[in-house]
Image 1 (cartoon, one colour):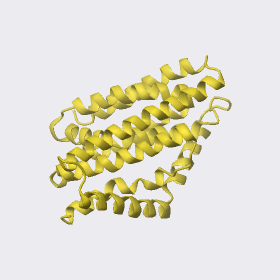
Image 2: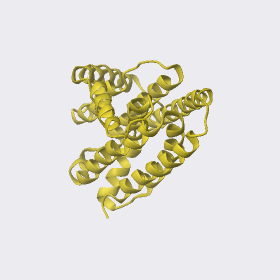
Image 3: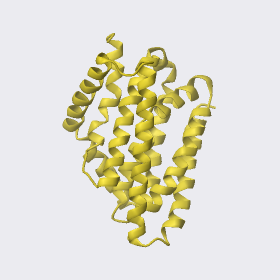
Length: 240
């Protein structure tokens, strides 16, 4: 059944959010702040480990000058493109719209932050792409099932720290991974190991930056950097 991996992934996130809401109800504000920082540190670790795996995929000995140049160009051009489109603002507006559908008093002031941060975390990364491709091509769900476990645990922590906005991240996850699964037969011939490695590396940099936002309360516009994740596809197709 095509799409089963994404369905399980979405269900795991929802289940984690339910548990997170039960935990959140008994947490004082200072403890919520501490948990938010702890979540940020975990996200930073996920970003660093993902970047290291992506780096080793790109070249067995680590990044060379060419790969470093590709990374810098993709980040710069992708960020400029995202800033022009203003993806971050569009995500926030979507979060505000979702918040408006929640009964008054049920959504916390961190609703939009929870929605944007969790959506980026669950969608950015190689597991979402590779797992969705395997789902569509061979009905191999192992990667997305593993991702579902990880996302489920993270959704518990995110919901306990930031609130119910995390639950609404299921919509970007379902649309993003579902679309890749449906288009798997079309895009798979063009996805090389080098391309996936570069996507993973740049995606992990954005996850790391997301962790910095949570820990340091910085205002890095991660959403506006999203196009950088997909630019390695163009670079590799051009033969560089």
